[in-house]
Length: 226
Image (tube, rainbow, N blue to C red; front, top):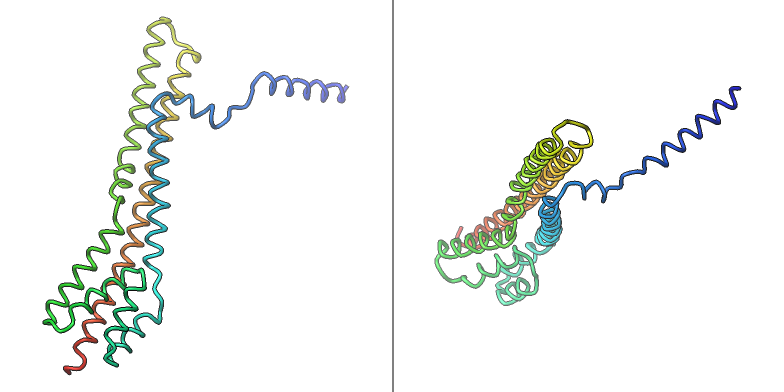
């Protein structure tokens, strides 16, 4: 008898699983309605911007520890052309900053300092390129999700008004749209927000490197006068 009960239970579970097919992620997203299209587009753009900026900023943050030491040796030895050639052959913000300063040698120290400072600001601006769009996505993605929430609620009340009764079947579609779009918008917004601040933190580190290099370079130019 126990064996028969176990067999019947297994058969009932199998029939239940057959009658209720699993819901895939794609099917779940499709139930979010048309508002999922802009949310998915925003997610693609956000991922692209985060990867692209991460690669650019990571390359800018890589500095050869011997670079500044070699520049200092060239300057102390009076080999300005060698120092300038080394900066031109190195594709980093720090190298371009020093190159600008080396080209101003012979002019007042204030003018050199101003040129170096402006070059540093320009390099930071290049690193921040398109980061504003990532911040916009972080702000508007949840708003699209809330639009989906309102759309889902409207659908629920519209279906109820047509059927003149309340049932799970009538409100299920609207609830799917309401919850899925809200969740999707929040997820995209959170990811974009984290990426935005993480990349800004990386840029702050590069900015600190540029400021430190600029100070060291200006001090180096003033050493012979001491």
